[in-house]
Amino acid sequence: MNSFLLNPETCLPEDGCAGTLVGRVQLDVGPAVVVVREDGVYDLTAVAPTMSTLLDADDPAALVRKASDLPRIGDLAAILANSAHDACDPSKPWFLCPIDLQAVKASGVTFVASLLERVIEEQARGDAGKAEAVRKTMMDALGTDLSEIQPGSDSATRLKELLIERGVWSQYLEVGIGPDAEIFTKTQPMASVGIGAEIGILAASTWNNPEPEIVLAVSSAGKTVGATLGNDVNLRDMEGRSALLLGKAKDNNASSAIGPFIRLFDDTFGIDDVRRAELAMTVEGPEGYTLTGSSNMAKISRDPLDLVQQAIGANHQYPDGFVLFLGTMFAPVEDRDEPGAGFTHKVGDVVRIETPKLGALVNRVTTSDKAPKWEFGVRALVANLARRGLADRI
Image 1: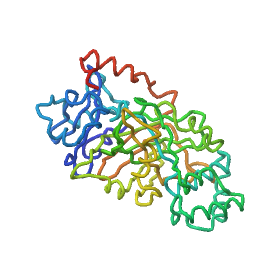
Image 2 (image 1 turned 30 degrees about the vertical axis):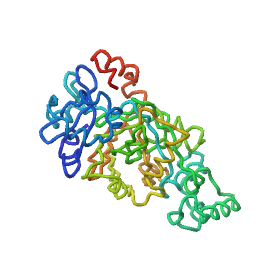
Image 3 (image 1 turned 60 degrees about the vertical axis):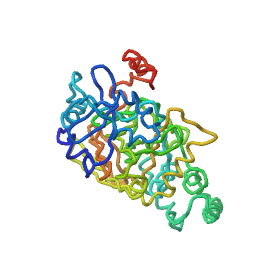
Image 4 (image 1 turned 135 degrees about the vertical axis):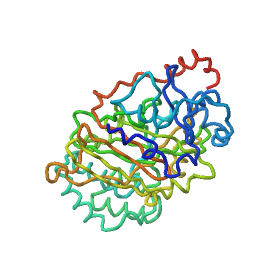
């Protein structure tokens, strides 16, 4: 991975450290919760031994701002540079995924563009070669702009009845314009990777893509307290064959990337910034190929806080908090190799996801069987904190 991609100038938000930026760093003694400040990266572990603990505070941003006499871990530039998967010195600190004990949830088909592509995957049965013909058929059948449809509304119900009559109703349309959002488990706690790490696709997949998304950080009480960036790596051929293969399409080794930092809600950043955000994404291939795209949060079909409310409540609790991928409108259809085959990843692709208020998340694509094995889970974290005398403060 090119070292110039992992430095403060390219990875920090446009206003630098003006906001409250927290994350996790691997130290020689184990993972540490940290705050990123103008003059370096500081250890918050004495304040909150886990990110889950920190985000459950009454006011996480205020708690971080008031923290003083924190141990300084090092320069941000040095720690970022050491986070590159192919240049990491394990004797020095590097950034981890900024969450730990939280559940990792995701909301699907929350944008019209990606909604249509999910329907196309389903109708094409996961065959990329059939996608363009199916796309034309679907657009002709819809005869309306789905972005004008409010999910769960009377007009959505009427459209559903019409499409059923025409024989083109889909389970993806159900969650896209119906009253109930799709909320699924992306991966397990502690399984996501951070900035600079390799992200994984299945070696058997021939049709897949990155999914640049904003990820909300939510406390155990259901309060949204911050946001970060995520790559909800997606295998279009697997899910297209059957929606029951969603786990195989979404939850594989290194298939969830989150970072670089969580920006806590404070007077510099809040939910309205999330609602207005526009994500930019670049894929640079090993053969010189470049793909660019964007995802505009203003075009989301459901409000981010509505998605949070559908994920947590009287029927579903998260005692360690959770993070929620908000979905993407990015669904690349440009051909990379064969005409009509659309886009798919190659090993060695470098994926950069960025937005001005949250910075940039950078990862390199490999296959899940070649990515570093996930070995440090919840039990390992608790044991590590116990050795450090911190387990009773989780």
